[in-house]
Image (cartoon, rainbow, N blue to C red):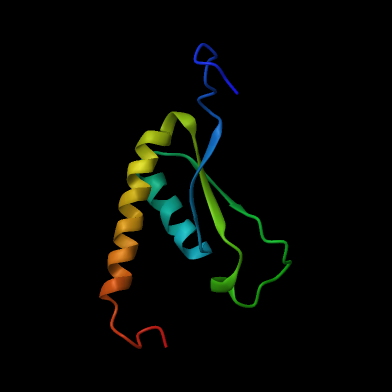
Amino acid sequence: MKSDSEPVDEFAPYEVFDGTPWEAGLLKSILDDNEIESLIRDNSRMAYNVYPSAASSIKVFVAFRDLEKASKIVAEFRDNMASEAAAEPEGENA
């Protein structure tokens, strides 16, 4: 464990989101628009997935230096996704 006196690596990647490929791609675009560099990592071991929405989760990472700003954007993104899902009429996804 690092002590308070050790410097923090400002480029160290930190996970800020875990979701579907579509959500991760959309969030990456939003982060890019806010001048925050991000990385997407797919931990799927499947060579080809017929159902992308059922794929394993995709993780989005940002550098420590952007963590605070990115965390606020991710929180707003999650809130917007939740409110959109709640407002979607029944049977829309059927």
